[in-house]
Image (spheres, rainbow, N blue to C red):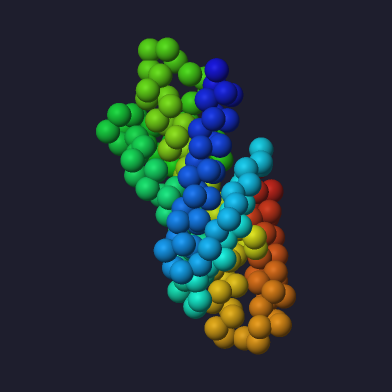
Length: 170
């Protein structure tokens, strides 16, 4: 039951995240045709409107949706004892569903899944949303042919930091 709930909430969170990109792309004058969902995530095929701000708004719309869900499912009112533990993205706040506290447990899983998606997608690593923002900002500063290489270098640097932090924290 726990695995099914976790998988279902993760798929719903990923779908809403990608739907945020689609809506933002269309609101900025761009287009969006498809959303692909896979067991490891999702991908919205979007073409943002013209301009750097349209690209940044479209890229940040997915994490913004996750943030809104986190605010709605924030455990401060229904599970204050888990407040600081639920902010740790490296572990789930619960290990199984309790029939006595099913709504509380589902709320905690909803918060944890969306918090993790938010934090991961803010990393400045291409193809994550933070990486798309870096690409859009680099395009305003350097030659277009160098943007891809520079974004990959920045992403590699941050990936190395995350890897070292993981090794040291383990």
